[in-house]
Structure formats: C-alpha cells, structure tokens
Image (cartoon, rainbow, N blue to C red; front, side, top):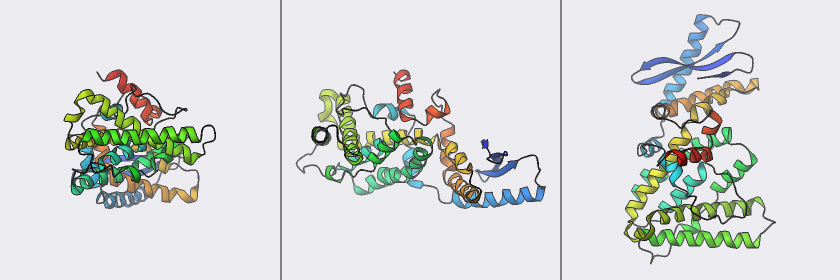
Length: 316
C-alpha cells in the first residue's frame, strides 16, 4: 500500500513476511537520497514494535461480530426502496446511522439476555464505530455526510423501552415504526422550512428507525407474527456485521491517509497513530481482503449509497 509523501517521497507500508502468523509492516521512505541500511532497519524495528504491541489490543468484540458476516447483503437489505419517504428533503446515507439504529432495535427486545446483547452486538458495534468514524471523517467529509453522521449520534433512549405489553417481535417493530413515523411527521410539520441542524438530525434519526423497521415488517408481510425476538436479533446482528465489514474494507486507505500530512510537526505522530491502527486491525483487514468486493472505484467504495446501488443491481 502506498501514497505520495508530501515531501516528494513515496510512503508505503511494506509487507515483510509473517512471523507467528502476524503480518509485519515497515514504514519506508523512498527518495533521491537513499537511507543507510542501519537507519532503515531502525525505522523498521521501531514501527514493527509499535505494530506488534498494538496487535495485542485487537477489538475482540468487533471481530466476534464480523465473524457472523458471510457477505455484504445486509448493506442492501436494511432499507427497502419500497418504503415510502417521510422526509421532505432527501439526504445521503452514512455507515454509522444504520448501525446505531439496528443496535437500538436490538436493545428493545426484552427476551434477549443482556449478556448476549452486549457480547455479540452492542460491544461489537461500539468498537466498530470507532473505526467507522475514522472512515467517515477521512472519506465522507462533505457537509451533507457530516449532517447524517451527526444524526447517528442522536440518542434513541426514549425508544428503547416499548410498552411492556408488547410481547412479539412484530409488535415491537410496529411500535418503533409508528413512534418514529409520528416523530418525523410532527417535526416536519412543526419546523417546516425553518429546521436547524439539531431538528434535522432528530428527523433523520427518526426517519432511519422508521425506514429500517418498516423494511423488516414488509419483508415478512403477513408472517410477521411468526418472527421471534431471537430470530429478529440474529437478523439485526447479521445486517450490522455486513455493514461493518463493507465499511472497514476502506480502512487500509484510511491508515495510509493518516500518514499523509503536510504539517511536518504532525507527521511523526500521524505515522505512529497509523501504525497503532494497523496493529489493531491487521486481522480484520486480512480477513476482509479475502472477500470479493463490488466493482467500484476507490471513492465509490467509501460510499454506502454506492454499495447499495451496486448490490441492488447484482443481488437476485
């Protein structure tokens, strides 16, 4: 992997084989002036030590959740185009918003034990959002994207405790859908034409809940009463895992961009941060590199909307 260095050099993480099944990388600068072999070895050893130390800090809950993913179908499945729009304005999508929404739905299922909920989904999503946020900050930094990412941070605590008389997965989904729909309609009507960013974010967040719950309900049609909370939890986990997997295929690019900075005083710190991230995510990166990715260019792979458009055309 390589990117142009701001000083004209070529900066790359160069693979140096494997040691105990762990990849090693060395930061190498190639310029008109050749580094002495001893200096290059010192750089290599320094970066390898940092990477190896970081490898002991693997995000285990995230890795456990990603192990549930077998493809990327969940990126397309979480939101159906058959669901009619509620918002007066169309917004871009982002990676983090559906992840937060899916986790919130899972937290609303009383039959799912706290241990299972935390270990398999919530902790994995929480760890994953650390890296998803880096992808979005580096690769989805337009004003439109930032607004949607802000919506992902809106709390849904008021929707995590449906009426205790709701016992089935279908009833809970319907309650979440109706509550979210009413919230969107109320905010759209009250603030029409004068919404500030906070109001827009609340509307976008509520709209995400409405669309995802309605999508699941539509997928079961009249059989929704047969859906158990346990089955719904598995479905939510799989979609979350697929979305995380798709997003994190962009992470090698994020690591390289971390090294690329024009500020000399920040360059060393950024390279060290990149080495830390590489060590933490090496196993994840290696696993995802074995998958067949959509035929999209690098910029489009960073967009969940581009992924969805591609998958809609290629998944039967």
